[in-house]
Length: 235
Image (cartoon, one colour):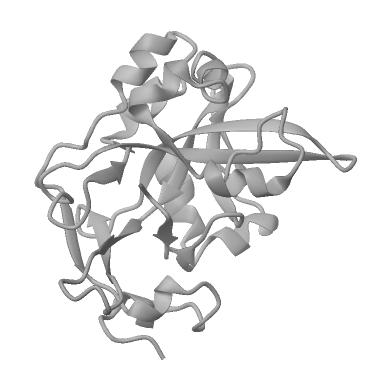
């Protein structure tokens, strides 16, 4: 699974150039993030309705489908397993629509390794791609009305771990390998089966990891910042 991730960059121009988007002031809170958690707003990218460009949008992490009567449903839908996408009541309709397939921007993600001693807390590891470059998770998003306002929510698709991640965890988020794959994922020329074929482990050799500070395991337990990426015990 993927339960936390990072988007530590605050360079709007760099992100805008990389993903061909414009960022407004409302999106600043999604940047310089060292411990993005479920229910928080994340930065997503979608195709324009005209199909000739991309636009950025904030979305609540944790999909809230149209039939849900409680936002807490989203906590159970932060991840969507690639193997069951086309069988899922919530995800199958979204995979079939290019307008629902999105990018979720990040520059790292966390997974936890179980301790040999069950009394000890799990050790978080921070995984980065190509030396810390920004990248995109394959995501699904939906917009519905909630208490009189429009609510956009999203989920990160996961798959089996590659050789880089497997020593820590047996699952990993689907990371689209390059800009071409990102554009194809959102394309209306891709049918549902073809879209699912994109949801596979990233080739090994591009991801590196290092132990993170255990304080990041508790949301709000420590002020969010670069120290979370440095191994150490929680306070």
